[in-house]
Image 1 (cartoon, rainbow, N blue to C red):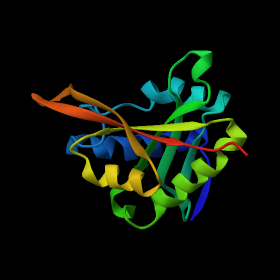
Image 2 (cartoon, one colour):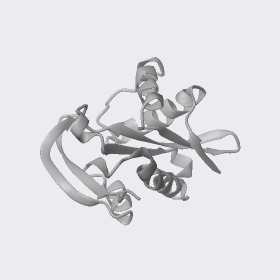
Image 3 (cartoon, helix red, strand yellow):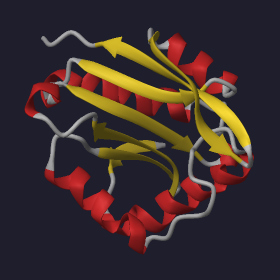
Length: 165
C-alpha cells in the first residue's frame, strides 16, 4: 500500500468511498450521494493550498483518503485544519486509516498547521475511539445540531495540538 497526494483522476474513487458511508447515517451529515462534478471545486481548493488530500492506494486502487480542510476562512485560523478520513468498507480496520493519519500528523509542521479538528457525530463511537487513540481530546460539544432522518444528533469536536518543529 502507498500513501500519496490525490490526483484529479482519483476523484471518482474518493466520491465513491464517501458516498458509501452516507446510508449508515453515522459518518457524514450528507443524506444523499454527492456527484463527482459537485466535488471538483472542493478538490481544486485542496490542491492550491496547504490543505491536501492524500489517498491510500493498493494494487492501483484507491482504498481510502484523508483531507485537511480550512477550518474557518480567516487568516487568524490558518494554523488550524479540519481532518476527515474515509476508508472503503472492505479495507476498514486493516491499518489504512492509521497510515493516513500518521502521514497527515507528520506533515503538519511542514504545512504550518498547529491544530487539527475532527467533527464527529456523538453516536459514531468507532470514529471517536480512533481519533482519541491519536491523542485527540474533546474540545467542543454541540447538542442536537444535526437532523438526520428526523432524529436530532449531537456533534463532538475533537482537537489535537500539533507541535511545530
